[in-house]
Length: 172
Length: 326
Image (tube, rainbow over all chains, first blue to last red; front, side, top):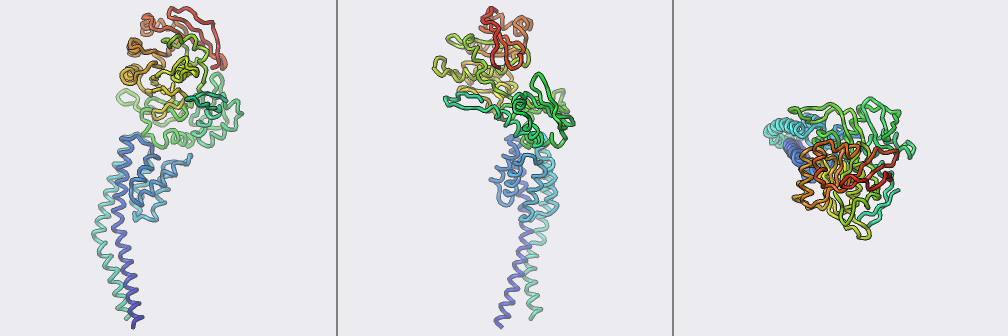
């Protein structure tokens, strides 16, 4: 009997944890998109008012921003030390580097990667336009992500617990 | 090898360091190609010209050599990335003027497609030619002139010469010497203000002069001369103002202003002789006021030497034609 009880509670715990994990992805994605938007806004200020080169700007951003976005800029600024590299390559490589530990979707990454294509190649006003455009795209993604969060976050959380219960009932 | 005294500390400059800072900027392929050149040839390079789709040219002023490597678009874009430090947006002013000053005081001239805005040059895009002019500071090149230009105090001096005769090189060394003073304290170091419209005298990067000067130096980088001279007079209380290529009428006004404010001037003017520049209305106006005490006339240099004659305020020769190490 005791063995059965322990087994049942283990199943319940595991299912609940899985539910929480999946629901946290729904919560994290809009948060990380927002962090990227904050980062772009800060980058815009560095470019428009500070005239600061990309490398120095990235180092500053990596110090100001919360994890995991700071790791992106840290990696990016390091890559810019390589002499024969292109900004595009460094940017994309840094994006690939963080996909493992962020909850951003492919479409979010795609927007950011497109932004990398133009980075550092234009004058200040062009650069500002590109940043504004990317911010607008990201805002749309964030809205979508918030929508999904509202719809599924609670549900997935409950679903994990309930599936656990279902398995226990079926096994008994 | 070159020994100079910087703030009383003996500094040994190796000649290669000039080249080293340039090579670190170039794409690897081009840098290796240049490193393989014999060291005398590498030392004598004055310009490295890189053009998309054409062989690399190195020139020594009087002669040129084409290197067996054609620059590709990728090489050029790597070079541009290095020059702008991956950030075109920090170079707007530079792209408008057509050159970028890099660490070490070297200047990179650029040419390509020009974009206009209301009839004025807005920027150069699609850059196809780069001309890297190596800054070689000839420390001590003005030494033999000092006896003529100094009596109790520095005299207002105008350096006259055709292009590539070494006017700016001479002016730079004068500025260094004045701001450094004399080791035996016969001449004390004076506050020198440089108005460096074309970033050529001090070769500043982010406002910091890259070439060697004494401790008492202030540089207004990339500032129009006329305005710059007035700004220095108002705010920096210089003893001596150094400016390059005086020519426009507003420059002349500022020159008079500075002299009447009791500031000594060291300036250069384009021209072959004193008679030559007297034909230019703005300059002849200044000269007729008899405010300049010394004229140094440079003639186009032969090999590495430069040749000069010094005239006093009335146009009388003070020295025979001489040549010094340039």
